[in-house]
Amino acid sequence: MAKERIVLGWSGGKDSSLALRKILAEGRHEVAALLTTCTEGFRRVSMHGVRCSLLNRQAESLGLPCRKVFIPQNCTNDDYERLMRVACLEFKAAGITQVAFGDLFLADVRAYRDRMLAEVGMTALYPVWGLNTAQLAREFIRDGFRATLVCVDSAKLDGSFAGRAFDESLLNDLPASADPCGENGEFHTFVHDGPIFRHPVACRVGAVVQRGQFHFADLLPGTTGSRRNKQRKQHTTKNTP
Image (cartoon, rainbow, N blue to C red; front, side, top):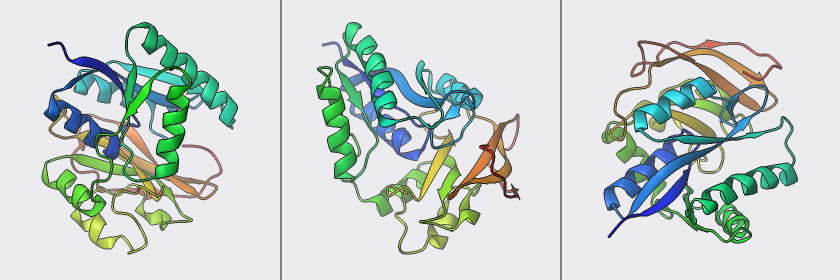
């Protein structure tokens, strides 16, 4: 029997990578494409601040096409829903009726996604929903994934965490108030190596910049250093990275 084709909501980060690994391991679905929201003008993954050039390299290493939805700067919720609806209807026209997400436990986010998809006659999958985030974070590291914190919300976590590798040292340094997977928006990551990748996505940490309460680590495409991003440069600016 042919596997059902689905789309995976893809941020380039840890949770969507874990969702993809689980989908591949279970073998019931075929991921037809990744679906990523990017910001016009900046050409970066929305909220994460990762360059589209690195997103492209990541998708190539995964062997999957990436459908980018470009949203305007200072995007309203109406704009977001309208643009996402267009993308979802394109997939539905191709016979795809399910979208998977890497959400872990935020019930309001799940309800929002379910409502959005129901409006276009689609449904959602949540492969890693309800899993223990402390265990999941350590499994992610143990299983050979490599990631860097690319965005930190300083209202929830000290901005100095931006640019750090997602490793045991980081988990040990997180305050008790922070979820180990950053599910409450404390931080976002970019995954550049792991068991689901054909090869590492070479990158290095550039400047860490601040925009409002958010600290962004600007990842630069590179040929070395994808596994050992140790050095960071930090300064404060009002510009988006």
